[in-house]
Length: 286
Image 1 (cartoon, rainbow, N blue to C red):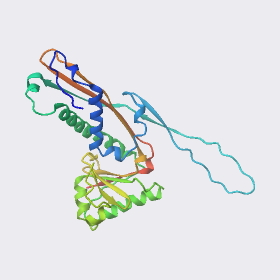
Image 2: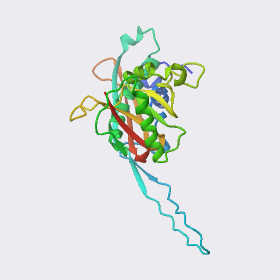
Image 3: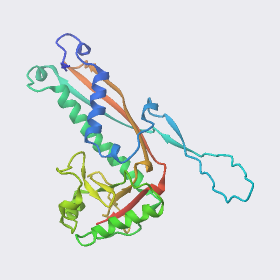
Image 4: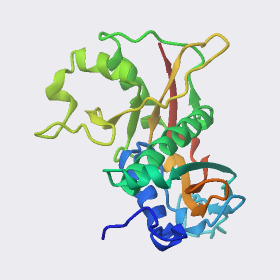
């Protein structure tokens, strides 16, 4: 279905459908984003606005006992983790009627794509910055990465997750473009990076190394102070480590009073929580 973004009448609402625009934004956000691939979004449908709180119940630990003729029955207990939808970002832009009439592009498509891309960068940067310190293992010193040692550092992360009994299926490793380039120059070579017959350069996905799906991102936290200043916080782990939820809760168009044009604005709420710290590994690379 094609939508005309601009009104030809006295109000803009005749052609602007906020719900459709919101869905377009959310779809485009996920198409380009690395974050949904490395986190779980199981609770996203339960939020409606900023300030919401989702209670996550953890799986109870069952005790295994030696059998000696009689048994005792354990009472299951579960702890709760709260995922707070406590953050929000917005966009707001003006569309001038005269300029709109002369436009030769689909402004709805162009505007939604640009808003989604800008929102993706802002949200992922914030989320990755906040989850880095939530891992059980956070390296306290930096490592200078070269083509000769990058594989060893990946294997170290894999060993750490193995020792914590983290599932192998679904593991990820997020690196900045600098380290992706070094990885491609390492002894792994291209043939060992991927199980695909064609290039897997989609949604930031680069390939597979020792059970890790490798992702590229420019949004990883770079330490700005202390002994690790300048180090990039590369993340390895399993999607069950990070719970993330977001929604574009408000999208609307308003006829501007002081000029002939529309104000288009939207609000995205989100929250993140490291719910299984053992399943996340933060390594500081330079």
